[in-house]
Image (cartoon, rainbow, N blue to C red; front, side, top):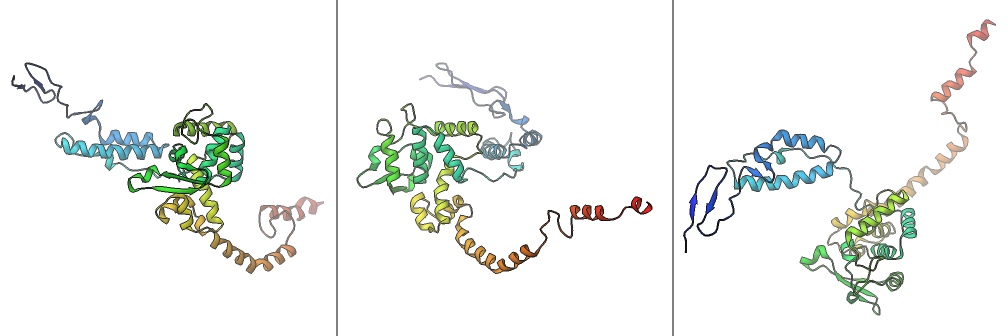
Length: 316
């Protein structure tokens, strides 16, 4: 066996040569991907921060990933990387996410009306099961029992800890599944008879929104639509979690967007209106009925000025 002989070159280029087979060059610790480590300075990161001012979410994700990678690289090559400019940079305040925004009735009606039968079936299953798109497109015939009217599946996000669920299949959902059967063993398929993919379904919805001039509503928002309405009708969180599969009220309430207090607010607001109802009605009936603001306001001052005798009239 031929013994490998190491030849040491200047620090930036080190290779191990063997008389039999040359090995791959050692990575240059001063090179990070296609960038020189020394070029990634605090100023460079700050410049990137400025360029992402209109894209806060994109910057925060980039910053988080690069800060993690930079820490690993710094531990491996402490001589070349002594600071982490990504970790020292600032995050942007992100606008509230609309990922979980429930669909209003008018948007839901428009999309369901304009959708193809296959896409309509997918939307209805998303709405009535309140599950994630990644789980819905993976439903198989083996998981569906039409006699027992049940759907048994494992939530992909909770597969490590079990995540098995058994949902009741109401008559309306049964009609959709039987009217638009999927290909092979899948419950749902595209209009072309192919398995749905998450990116295809999202692209289909995006194209519909653009064509119909609708605001941004997501497929994941359908997961929040049903539970939000049910919560406003007085359904308890325990019953809602039996549908959605959430393991805690804290995770569930991310989807409810304040609807958990709706029933209490209804009772309180009714009492508030009842308390001041007589006063408001009397003041409305006896009050100013003109379009002007009443005793105050620019319209009132203008009216008074028109009624006031002018100096020209007095001189005449």
